Every structure is written in structure tokens, then in C-alpha cells.
Amino acid sequence: MKARLFTVLLALCSVPLLAQTHTFSTTVQTPVQNRVAQTHTSDFGFSYSLPLDWEIVDIKPMLPAIRQKETEAATSGAEKKGIACTQIALVAKNGNPSSISVIDAMAVPYSCFGRQLTDADIPSLAKGIAEGLKRLFVVSDTVSSSYKLGAHSLWIERAHGSVIARPDVKRTLEITCSLLQKGAVCWMAQAADQESLETFERGAVTLDGEAAPALVPANAFQEKQTIKTIKLGTGSGSPEKR
Image (cartoon, rainbow, N blue to C red; front, side, top):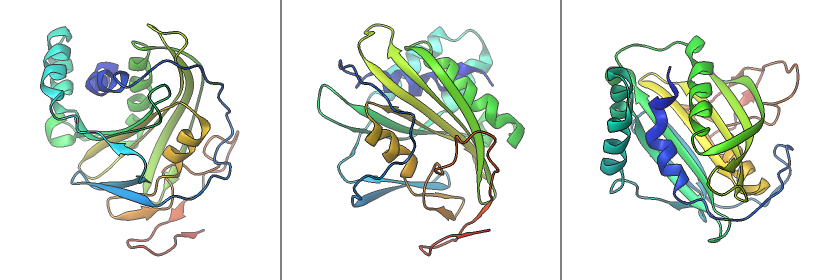
């Protein structure tokens, strides 16, 4: 799966980045204050929760011009089709003007893409997005892993990035992807600080009706981890581990 499949999203994500240097920790999910959540539900088959102080960005006015630009730059019919098929399900931002973090969710329906993907395609999907990020960032210190939420397999990658046009602007980049009944879905964070990264990972999700307390488990990047299947509920009850 080509990196250009998600260049529409990558172009959108670059807009809010402003100048400020940060030092990033690789520690996952250290304690942070609980905040009231807002839940974004997509008709694509998933929901995802963020704190109320994150602003949901209306990107509909921007999409036609961005799609046209990316389509004109595409070098094949397959790339043009991928750009046309990509759906931007969510764009959210948080932070002051000098230090903005961005979280996105994107999807590609099988009905548009033209073929059913399998779990074996998930790493290529995430790696394709990561490769596409190199159009905007100098990327370093990349780590990747995989895990399961209920019946769904997920692949995750994390890296440090500095904006090519503004080397002083640094972000932690994290991408996680899975397959739903209707198609592929990926979430991505451009985190300006550790709290934003943890907000991204701790967002509660439902995947085809299965509820999970966090998009990314605390042990997702543990070396030689044993992937535990989590029995997920279909409502608001607490999940059971097995």
C-alpha cells in the first residue's frame, strides 16, 4: 500500500504546527489528571474519545483544494484513487499557539479502494503513512509493535520528528492502524508534549461495536511482549482480561 494513499491527511496535519522546541520522553501512560471526555462517533464503524479541552477542527472547507493539489501531483491511477477514497474522520488540536498537538483519524472503505484488506496488510498501511510523514518531517528513533483489542489486530509505530521547514519545531509522531468491517482505519498523533501523547493513547475506542478502555495499551511497546487478547464489551461495562 503506497504512502501517498494518506497524503491528504498529512497535508492537513502540517497546517497547525507552530514553532517551539520540546524534549520528548518515551515513557507510556504515566499518571495524568482525568478529564471529562467527548466521544466522536464515525459511521465508518468506530468511536474515539478525547478530553473536552481538545478542539474538533472542521476540515471540510479545506478538503477540495487539498485533494485537487494531491491528485494533480499523483503519478498513477492507483494513487489518485487512494486520495479520492481517503476519508478524514476526525481532526482535533490542543495547546497554545506556540505548542499545538494534533490528533487525526482517517479511513479507507473497501468499497472504494476496490479490495478487502487482511491483517497481513496492516503493517504496510502504518509504514506507508510513516513513510509519507517524511515529506514533512525529519524522522528518527522509530519503534514499532503490534497488539490486539478484542478481535482486532493493530500495528503501531512511534518516532521523533522535526519539521523540515522549521527544524526547531519538534513532535512525537505516533500511528496505529487496524481493519474494521467496512475498511481500514488509522489514528495519528503529532504530540508536542508527553501529556498529548498520553491523551492520544488513552482515548477510549469502540471497534465494530467492541469497547476498549484505551486505543493503545500501556504495554504496547514492551520488548518481546506477550500480546494479550482483551475480551471487550459491547456497552459501557468494564472489559475483562483473559
